[in-house]
Image (cartoon, rainbow, N blue to C red):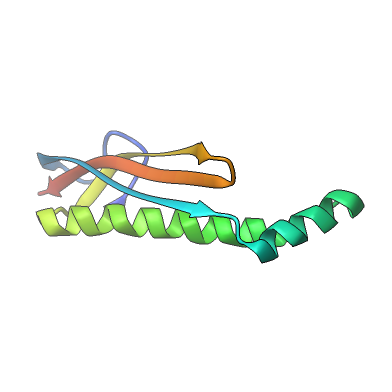
Length: 104
């Protein structure tokens, strides 16, 4: 499957738009991450636990979007976008969405 954040796929012809697909997940900070963040706020620097958690969260949301497209029999996803929002204090939602397409 081909993934792009553009409306077309270079060198390919889109023959069918199969609809919007999305993948989302919501994560909260656990106690270990909260303690690490507190310590880092005192000394400064990257909060690598949060970086890792958000990387994993984005990956999970992206994979869920791909699964939706795969169920439709898509060959690719175009116009991929990602959004994030704070749901409640300490919880973030990550969502990927795009248009599933069939290629010639």
